[in-house]
Image (tube, rainbow, N blue to C red; front, side, top):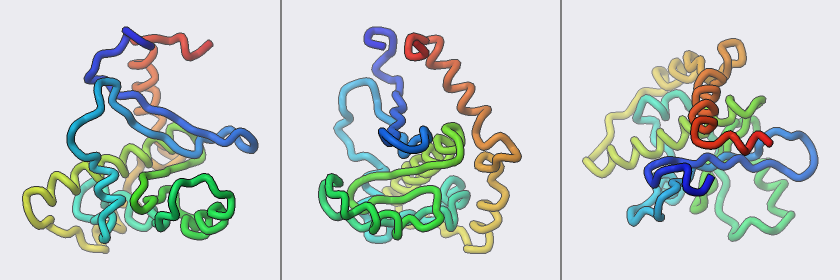
Amino acid sequence: MAGKASPNDSLYVFARAKAGPRAPLATLKRSIGPEPKEYSPTMAVCCSREGLSYSNFYAAQLFGKVAYHDFEGITIHADEGPRLLKSIGDRNAVILRNHGLLAWGQTLPQTFAILWTLQRACEIQMATFSMGQAIPVSEEIARRCTRDALQFSPEHGAGQDVFNALVRQVDRIDASYRN
């Protein structure tokens, strides 16, 4: 895609295991332009003792869906796998302390919707905290927001509409990835 995207564009990278289901294990958003000089909001949340604060519209949709796994160094040792799976439990996303975010779902669009929402929640949290204390969302309201967040529900497309729109945008830039 070199030369077909502008420095303000974003690239979404999807990772999956070499063996097993072809479902993605993770997605990652990266800017095409030079590395930014400021911090990454997602990394800042991953490195904060409190983690994700349920104090904004996006975070409230993820109440009870995000797990945490403590940093164990560079993730190259197979013995971390069982501990990671135990930390994840039945959640669809995990904040890897001092490291980054992972998300998964039944489909690529659902996985994207979960990760995008988590990333956006981190961005809003850090912007809010830079201005002072956040207004907390009550647990009752957060639970209701999570229940009502149709973008994750297979019965309501699980993010397929947004994913299709993004694919159309990428196709306009360069559809050669389809080959």
